[in-house]
Image (cartoon, rainbow, N blue to C red; front, side):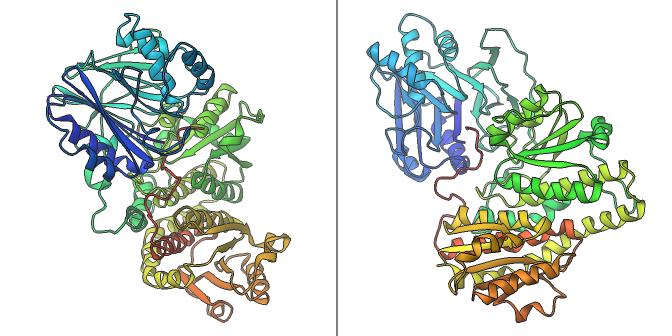
Length: 610
């Protein structure tokens, strides 16, 4: 959830680390800090607030610094302020630690350390670790062994870098449940929690696995388990393009990513759905294709936007392929002792591939004998490495905290998986051919919807001060209502709720008056007339109706204050089209409210802690 960067080598390290932290700020922007190894001393600079504050404070500190570690924080233990910012240091200010994750037994360890005379300065769980290392280090144990023995006392998750003033030629790195990779350069190495922080400097990387630690010097990397068993690591080549993580001509990353969706949807289908061949090929599922076709049940686990995508996947699989399907919050899945086993297929859906709850659910599914598969965006992520197979969504880096293009790419991949299974289960070629063609037309239809951005900006200015918004949808568009409401909450701080339209009269209708905007997704599908009845119920209570409707719906304008037109498509693929205006609406409302769209308060991009 936070961002980690470390550098050791022959170049001036401070600018490299600050640049990496700037690229990771979307993962945590409560506070930031660096620790500089220089001349046998440890200099720590940290500040509350955005990276720009730290950059100002660190100006002029880039001379003679060949080893630096840095961190940008999303607060878990302790409020966001300078004291709680990382790095944290020991009593003598000789050892510095930066940490992503949560130390679950920190309270017990802290009491013991306080009794031993250690001085604590912060309210964080992380500070426990640096004092554990210190306690071992002052007894004459070397830094590597001190870190190793300290980590054996820790219960929880971590991705850490440790630096010591007395051993400036090395950095110690370790991981358990929080991602870390090492970029390999010429007489230099860069450590980061995300590839975007180091791609400017190298494309050669190695990924640490859980329970591994590494001693990193300018000239080499030695990797072992915590039990000191050597581990052979393979260097991989990053495919990430630096331009992909630049904002370009757009005002915000979120707007850029919304407008990338025609291409990212194409990328999700490219080489997998061939026009005229009526065939879906998903290489990462080829070896489990029979299990998918014969599955007695498919279960999706995910969080947030990924959970909403999975809900659409449930409609797709049950209605098209006839497979019993369930969708679970990953955060609840493993705490209720789910009944799963051989014959079940569990898909973990996660943009980052590092979501802590989703990863834990995947691991539990495997332990209980289910086929455990992944649908992720980030190549080389933990879910991708630990699953029995899966599919990359190929959306490219998503920097905006509020997910947009990853959602529509997830839906596209879910549609492909559905068609693959449907063909194996005997769905007619005629029906499948129609569905293939509908999918191939989606990118052009998304391009059409993006042209409505100007009109939606006008609507946003009208409704920017609404205290509450209700979103309604039916069938596969109910998850779209949930996603639209989530986007508005995330980036504009307006309270919003998504509901199945028919459930409105079971409670939410009490909220509707002449001040309440109600966004209704009303495509001309099999349940169109039902949705029109719900619109009439809102009108009768003077709600302010914003309706997402098809181009050929000539009657809807008489019922709604605002109509946003979208092309008609096959019902269960409709969410890919219908969510676009809701993304734009949330974006333009946030801009009108002068909110930081890409870095909304209290949120970070990847949730790698429980």
